[in-house]
Length: 368
Image (cartoon, rainbow, N blue to C red; front, top):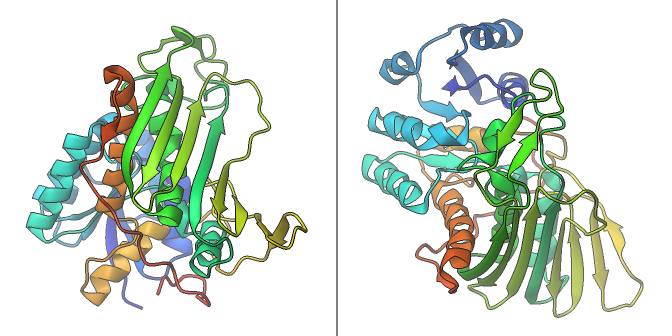
């Protein structure tokens, strides 16, 4: 099977699962080269995953063999690297969030369109077996017309486990920009686009102390809100609630619930690809676990990249984890924060229609 060459920029904490899946799981991807400001990290990745080349970003952008730039750097670098790659004529897939501001994200979407290139981004967990099963249940009418949704991501931050957690508390970080993309991307895939949002935010602690290695004891200045609550009005009229927090020690709240005129749906953790999926309908028997209808229930990060690669091979630009989707999610997050700052409802400028679902019956390694 023909493969698409990928240049990976960033060999940090999240890169391992991308390298694993793009080299061992998906049949249409080839990791052509990798780059990192830390040369030791790039060399270690190349050796572990048999990547044939270590290049600088500039060398990648000049290399005619590379078709996709996979940008998995920290959020502060997303916009600059994506723009450079698009200007160099490369398709781009970027880790979440797409950028630090909606205007930057919208610029990248426009640039990709003008250049005839694909732009896409994480998370691609909504393409996994769990959320795709939920999508099928909704599309097949099991809960009737969706009327509401709730989403909760409550924890006490990442400084207890991440080796370098400082960026979570700088601009582009915080619980909404870090974890919100998983929840909002799942909601948009299940419910459709959002037309207006309101929000309230709060910063509980001015500093955080790292308790993980190798930076144990380092004190981090907190620059962003760490408890964020938002209300969403979807274009279909349904109303959603989302709370994300780095200030909560423990919680029993669900990840995501979808409410319809004929039933309710418990959606699995959107930071994963699998289940369980629980459905309750009018028969009054309560929630029952539903077998997954789709594959890719294991950690399949890179699925969105493989889908982009398949679009290249087929000569179309309809990648599912698209720039339009990632930018719509980015605007929702920015809108929630802006609503808190202005005290007014934020009316969305972008609109989005749900991407086509993955087909049932796929063979592992394939996306179509």
